Length: 139
Image 1 (tube, rainbow, N blue to C red):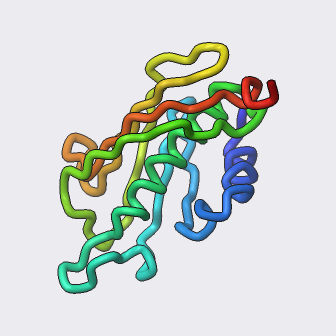
Image 2: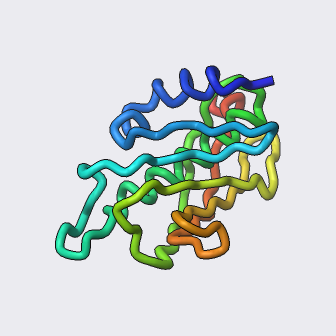
């Protein structure tokens, strides 16, 4: 079983995750990735609004960590292709993301991720991605 400490170590291997300040939150078996607010994650200071790259980075990392959990810590999956839908302005506050693996084959996994701030039912962005499983990457 993957622990919160294992998740922290996995995120430390990803420079962009460190730059965004991402923190794992594991409650029972439910995983949520937290992007604490940082001034450096603001893309439009006039609004202010989070940068789209910070939001998509959060979504992508949530998928990778969810797959890391599903693969019992055997390695980090690599993105093949992702599509992000920006649904609302990301306000200057903490942002959360949760991933759901729709299908995981021997080589490729399909993952959907939702990012929200104040209300899970009002997402600010959603992502659908395809990821190469760690064992398939070794082939």
